[in-house]
Image 1 (tube, rainbow, N blue to C red):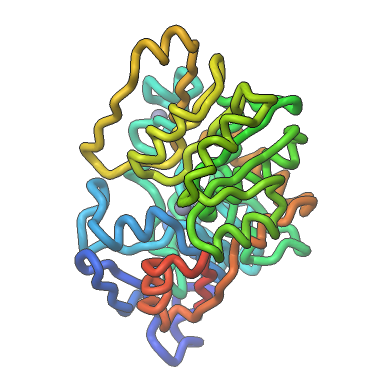
Image 2 (tube, rainbow, N blue to C red):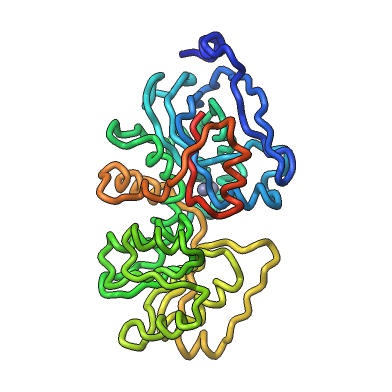
Length: 354
Ligand SMILES: [Zn+2]
Ligand SMILES: [Zn+2]
């Protein structure tokens, strides 16, 4: 369907959610444009809420000044393709990661495309919408055909799961190891499901709130500990026969979590600092502990195309229950309620369906 045909077939206007200022979202009219060479116009079938969206909603984002479109995890159906696009055609169901590297900068030349100088600035935003225009660099590198058996919801997990797969590629967990995950939110759970699939000896989740602790247990954590209980620190210290965990994955994005991660890991262990803290947050490190206990601090950011390809393969195989982290569904017209639910923390990931 061409842009003109889409306009005709939509009696109502097409909508796109705009963050006008922190805590203020408006559904505004969006006029489809014909895709230029390499671009693709996509009808959004599902977008997912994400912690980054909530952070941006609360305090704005340094890279995306308001007013800004919002939402970056999505899947959909191709409506129209620009000249030169041969891998996809109108009607194809697709899934995609919203960034792609330039291939030319210093970091790309070092194989660290996750740090590409252009990737984040050219990120696709605006998935809380009826339609979305995909830029050429994303179409050519990080867009995939959605397998028919994979629900649109799960396909939209390609982006967050790619971040997790990238982190594990850097941290190199081993099957004989014991891991502790701090934070039982959607990212903590995606880490847990993936680490369990890698066959780790024990995967322990530490979280807050009865609901989140219950979900972590249901999704397969070997042990779930309440961060608010005093005994939790001692129970972590007892892991691995009293040596403590080999790997601690920090997913709270709070300075207390970062400090806790450093305090809990065993001598010679690895700390994965996955959750980004607010701008200006400082971490105090005991250099004696750091050096004489031979700690490795890993702070993986974003993902590379190779991580996206591996993640696509994992989702395509459908062996793991990643879809379980999506536990609410709302229409696009209910976008305000989605953010209210996220603020209260009574949902993991919410699917937003136009
Ligand atoms: Zn995200
Ligand atoms: Zn680059």
